[in-house]
Image 1 (cartoon, rainbow, N blue to C red):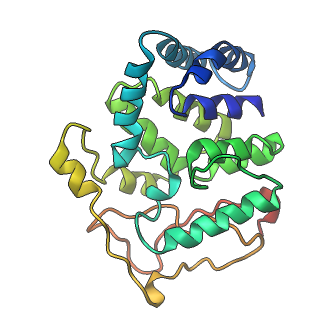
Image 2: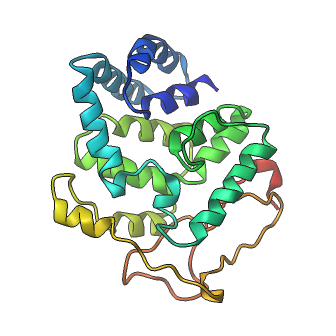
Length: 248
């Protein structure tokens, strides 16, 4: 799906190659009938921003948003597992999803990097691709809301992904994500606290309750609860990312 490759490119670090590809990206956006006029206009604004001004300024702004601010991390598992040991296993499972889908990433990025995940989804048929990007809908929605708060045109990419997936985010999981710290990049003390290393837990309580059904690869726990907001045992909602054909 060309649209997912285009959206993936828009979320990458601004470069001369990206700027050169912007006319093609704009054409792909306008040719996609699944996106409404509002989504296309918003994506146009982002393309215009990336195409204008000094490239260094665009790179600096990107770094402040996605590299410096943990709550806007483009690594999906940052919002799912934090620094818990489950993150490592989830990485292994996601790599297996890519391998079983015949996808061999050429980048050195971690497998949960959202542009990479979208590149993989773009290799699937439309139904499976929409299913894949819809499964972490609450994470995408939380990122969209945080970017909206900052009046960032990058919000348009996440709104477009949600529109393509036609997925309604889990309200409880989204609420918990939005209650986590979301400091501004110039608040150094808050940023240090947000990036502080989390406790690594071991033992049966740290194990995922899903197990390995169907396709072995899945994202185990689809959100990390905010401190003090942990649900009662057995009540925690889960989201699994897997091939649509592997579901029970």
